[in-house]
Every structure is written in C-alpha cells, then in structure tokens.
Picture 1: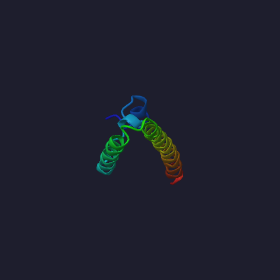
Picture 2: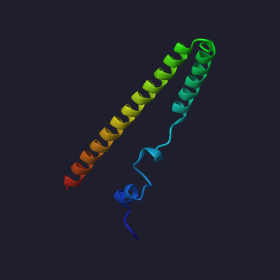
Picture 3: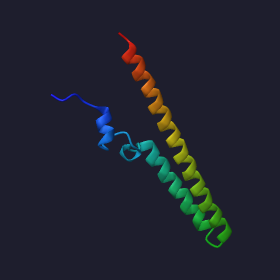
Picture 4: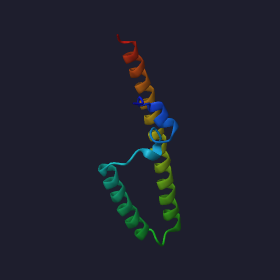
Length: 92
C-alpha cells in the first residue's frame, strides 16, 4: 500500500491551490446580497455615467482587496502549517 503524500497531491494539482478551495454557504449568501445591492445601485445610477463608473471602480478595488487578503491568508496558513509539521517531526 502506497503511503499518502500531500506533496504529490499538490504536485499533481489535486490539492493546495485556490482553484480547489470551495466557497461556503455564508460566502455565497453574502455574494448574493452584494449582487442585489449592485443591481439596485445600477438601476438608481443608470442616468449617471460618472456614478456607474465609480461603482465599477469600487467593485474592482473590492475584488482586488479580497484577492490580496486571500493570498495573504493562504501564505500564513501554509507557513504556520509547515511550522507545526516541523515541531511534530521533532517530537519523539
């Protein structure tokens, strides 16, 4: 029987990357609320091109912030997991 390898799971693209991390119900609920708010704002701003442009800019800035936060959380989780692994490996 072959021993499980997290390293090979990552190497083979089965785990450890953002594409394989599923969003949870809370995230999907918040995304749905956000979409409703954006639709309402777009309706109110349909005659205001500058307002619509600002709304789009806000959307992209918010998406960039979320992406940066996710990347940082992933890095921290990975680094801390490695530290825990090293400590466990050193325990006899």
